[in-house]
Image (cartoon, rainbow, N blue to C red):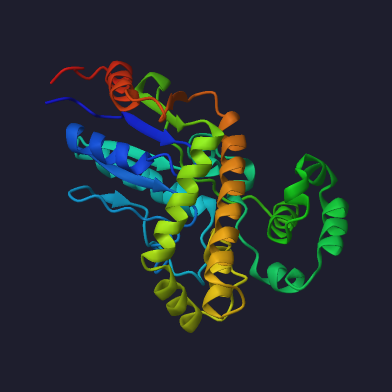
Length: 307
């Protein structure tokens, strides 16, 4: 038996690179289980649009943790993830973290101080109707340095401005307990490809999802939830497909919009992952990438390469 105690595999990269497929194959070979590190796959009833792949014979932690109208923070996920990792270690199983959300990964191993600032419901009610300019002015007043550190996109995102104000004004509570794992016991595997390849894969995947249940899924969500300003519904595809369901746009236009926002999301993911030098990258456009990734993981974690 291979000892997997306190070893981890982290598979990261932009959308549509086959992260879950690789993770599932590794889990079957090395007696592992998957942990989803995706900020939208935590929501129940949002399966098609968020791409909740469910490979047969593989357990995945991190799907369907809360309803779309419930709050779920990065700190909540970090607490959940470490609980899952400890349980897997206790059973001598290999945790395989699958992530397209760079912030989740960074917070898992190096949590920022702001992770301990809990959501302030009263503040959110008071500032919830404020426009972009007013929120910007308030953040400049209470946290000028935090505002300067934000990129242009975040400075013009009301939800992120509100969170920044919340952090600037909030009191730090207990930060999630982070385990210390030696870097030689973590295999950081990054999957990527040329931009043209990624765009083509994204476009094909959107078409597939649009034709395989997205309409029914969105119809159920519209019927059940009135407030689509919740973070859950910022997941790519949902607002675009809601316009189609409500006959505001054609199916062709909805697909085009969804593809465009998914490609924009891919670019943001790549920006995040560029900031994480731990990864060893594999080009999924190469024929032998899966075997190369497997052999590298075995060597990194000191598993037998040939079995």
